[in-house]
Image 1 (cartoon, rainbow, N blue to C red):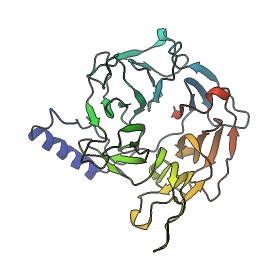
Image 2: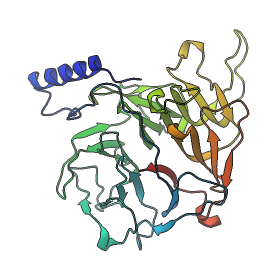
Image 3: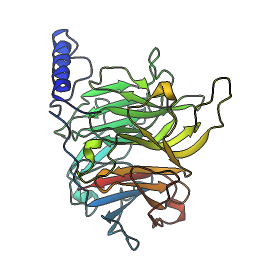
Image 4: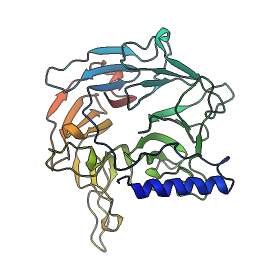
Length: 359
């Protein structure tokens, strides 16, 4: 999963073909300026942002046993529900209600309406709206190029807002997810979306039978989604280039909350019972050898984010919101190297959880 000069040239040629064929004006638009060469290693973040059910906590990094939130903020005072939230690569925060996106630039000190840097009304030109004028944003995510993506369960639609943002803008890309004939057919109940360092989009979605899968949509986004074959929520990615040069064991990893078997059955044997664990997969995935975790932890997490420069993983337990820190990559029978209790109170420590790293 490395970006190379050859990859960039292929993308440019593909974009040109779309325009010449007449598809450029109607199909999904490619990213304006794809990164050139291999990705630059990500410097250590200064902040860990924790979202608990509409309450925002800012921890200064590195964490230690006595760490407390330096800021505790209501994400949307008076809204009455937990908004969707996303943090961009430059520390900006986008908070979305069913009708509006509010963007706050770093440093983050308040989410009061008077301090909004940009307000974007949600319109049909941006995302699907119901008869009441509301969207159903189950997730929002920034990609590595600072574009904002909306995951809307009205119509199972994914749309991109491309920088520079403005008050009156239109989606640059709209993906109807779960369309008949695609590998994602029927998987119209969207969950979280994530991006790897190459801006490849991964979407966790489920169908009417409550079967869930992680789907991959490669660049350019005109391509239909393909399934990874994994039931993997809270997915996060580590590219070996993100580690510091001093890292002892840099590896390409896929991490998340895994539901499935822990081992590939022998020929003629039944599969082992499924488990619900935090799993780690080395990449590239090897479907022919069986898509089972290389390592796992017997825990259920509501959020997860990797910090490759520090060789750490931050997680929130789904039961009580405890903030746990593990070494990266996961080792066999890994235990947290640090655990911090959730500061949000029992009623808010097990719902709508997210973790973000910020400069």
